[in-house]
Length: 304
Image (cartoon, rainbow, N blue to C red; front, side):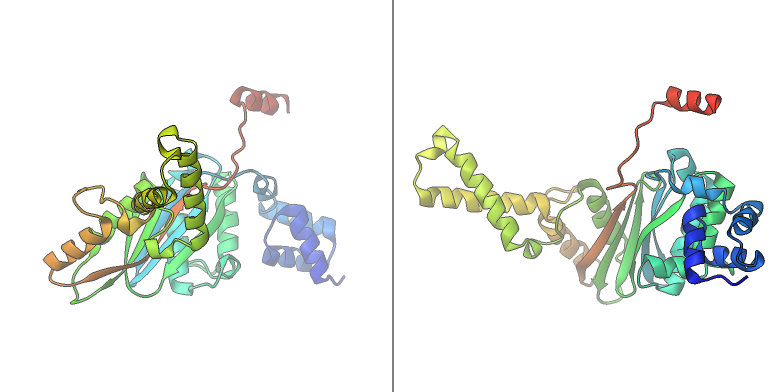
């Protein structure tokens, strides 16, 4: 019995198993949907279907440099315990290696790439990990810097992964500079890299808030408009120093801003270093975590 692309899609939705495995199952079952589901269960693949619906907000953010390319990835699991599992960590590193080798355009393209060192796709390898580890596991996002001098930093065993991208002259080794900047980004999570990136609408909103605050302050309310405008300009400089990486005080030495630290450290090494960009992934950020009562969960399992 023949089967269509719509049948493959239906089987995928029923089981949560990848497209290629669904196609193989339908081919092996002559297009019979029930037999295809049974085929997948026998293979152990459909066992991951129930797990696919569970919230994965733990896991690991990982950054590295492979063949001169900077890669940062986030892979999620359901529990912090699994995030420290050696097999899981190896899987995350393999995903990063696949990104460097495949240079995918987006997450869908990455999932279709051959997982590093295997003939399986990343999707198939991810399903394999679900079966081995017994939790929902999900490759969530990645970023790659193909050019420039990239420096990775992993904070707290994978809670945060940062990748800093620099332009370096005279062949100097800017690893330490990059790591210091990455640690600053991990700790303070600046909204912008440089004050030039702060848009007019953000500035307008900040000015508006400051003016309202002064209007509500008895000491400030009676001051002339131009005086209040000057005060606002001073406060905006504080806004830059709090929200823009290069204008922030350098955490390791507050005599410098980050920008001045980079210039000074590069000069001491006999060259120049320019901060180009960075990526900061914090595991689980933006994922709504499900709060469950542990005792209730055990009761559910016992009572079936």
